[in-house]
Length: 216
Image (cartoon, rainbow, N blue to C red):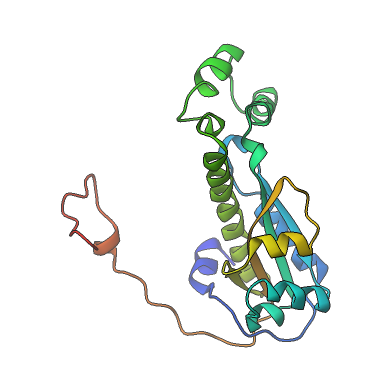
């Protein structure tokens, strides 16, 4: 299956066949997430794969008992590490790219221009900016996983209406991790109709958005 086909076929699934998902398929989905791009290659994501039924039902409580969470065969708890965007860790990631020959930056450029700029270095704007930037990268990674899931014949549901603190406590996560969302994974037991999408002329503008209508 090519990427365009996976994009067109992907749908949010909330009804699951009670059939175990093969570990090989789970690993292929996770590998897609691992291969996602990230700012400065910091890769701030961490994933906890939950398959035990009792644990999944417990996690569902952090989402007010939503049935599509409690019945999912696999719940991937998508977490992030804010300190991945600390000056030192960000520098370490960029330095690795330089050492691998991906970039050719002298230390002066790295330290004084890149890591010395509010545009390029989230740590300069504080922890909230670092968490937002980490969350952006996690969303890219999860999007990759949803497409690979389609390629594996699986369905997904991106569950964000959860108590992140409760989920964090249930899984005894490290203090420096934060819970971003759940990615539910399994064999679909439904074939949802395609969701409507806004037309191109409402969302796409060339060179300027001067023609955009206010409020749309």
